[in-house]
Image (cartoon, rainbow, N blue to C red; front, side, top):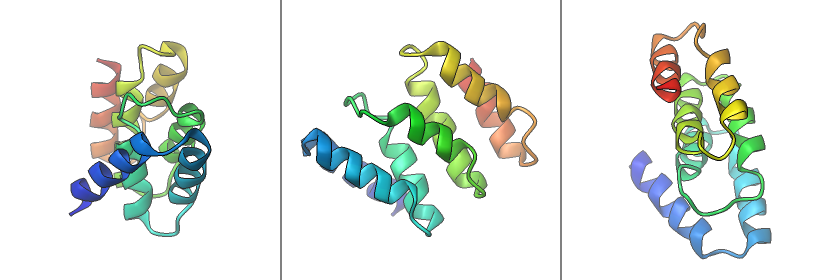
Length: 111
């Protein structure tokens, strides 16, 4: 179900005009529900250009939920070639995360 939500959101973002993308990403990234925040992080793995991708991934990488942080790291890994310094710094910061899944995701993101 969660993967389907991320795929559906990703598809919706691909079809939306840039202003609607920003609005939707912002709303999902600040949602109270951690599943919604994780879904938007997974949707940001898409190669579709999103004006605020870097800021949202950075925000979600600091989320209270380990699932959201892991999803943000997946997105950071996908965008590493766009701004290696930024996305590597995000992953580097999570190498010492208290959750072992997040630490593993950070190591994978760094390659």
